[in-house]
Image (cartoon, rainbow, N blue to C red):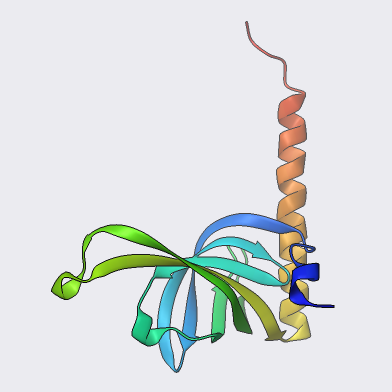
Length: 137
């Protein structure tokens, strides 16, 4: 089975939290936009000299006092221009990247899966409760 046939099979949630990426031994910070048991979508400033396909991911799940460590593979990266020039007049970009979790401990994989499923359950329960609220005129 290739990557495109397994794309978005795992449930995912929207997040707004920070994580750290280690690329070639250098720590980079990113914002987590989406999370699933099999991957993460992040956004960060683009630095061409420091980009890599294999990353070490460090992620603390909001509301849980544990950190997940995983090796990830960048599956896609999309650049978006930022207003104004960067240093020395060069254009600036942000990079949104999809990172597939290629290796993690069973404990971290289970924790990640359970976290995503529980957050989805909470979101759905909240949405169902809002549908049943009486409406004010």
